[in-house]
Image (cartoon, rainbow, N blue to C red; front, side, top):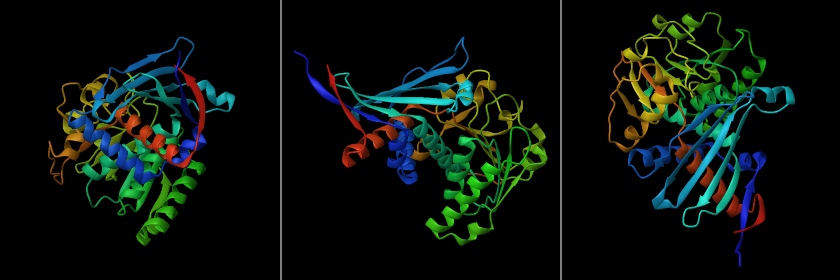
Length: 338
């Protein structure tokens, strides 16, 4: 005789209503620490191009001591734009580790966006110079926006944001989003100095990089975005776009000159920016957060954080969403015989 339990379903709007930036930061920080301490496992990543177009991937893992088990199936389908849909698609599934029965199905798009933005923010807190005032971001899409928003939230010293769009033209939507984020930062943190932060397009990519304290790359990863000599001592770079074999955003030879930090060393060498210089020594961000490693930034250091996105980020944030939904009654519950 079969048992029947409830399966919780959470759509995009419900997930978005349940997530707050500070809670996501805490969950992502926990994921890095679990990884560093060996309490959370990452299973081999699936990342494959599809014959009909698109890229499909699976990131999975567990935290046995917390009963946390699950995966995120995600990818990119450029043709969705013509259908009026989002090209990035992600779905997260959490399981009961004792029985294998599914507990919760979660739209993973906003989870992916926010957890990656939070990871970038934690990288800035750990690695960027404390007196950083000038930020240059490559890309104007969803991930470029969230990376910039977390930077504004966590670095009150920022005074200038320059952005480089795909076509090199001003992007009114990106500017409006970031200006609104600046206003929100002022209202929520009482950091009136943020009012002086300006937003403007890049006209010369190399010049913009050379004049920046922080560079964020959040593009499709089609090739180097600027020249090697543009990166000056003291610069920190958050690199988001290289998440598949063959992708890159940094110029040849840069990793040999930097202090390199990653979310996961194996994954970074397989699908991240580090795939182009696999022998480069690296430190995981989680080891900095747990104190297993130490980094005392010197004024001339160039630092790179290679973000490939680890499953534990998705799982800790998804668990947060599930717990919030259970506490508030949000979501759809369906019978699920097993």
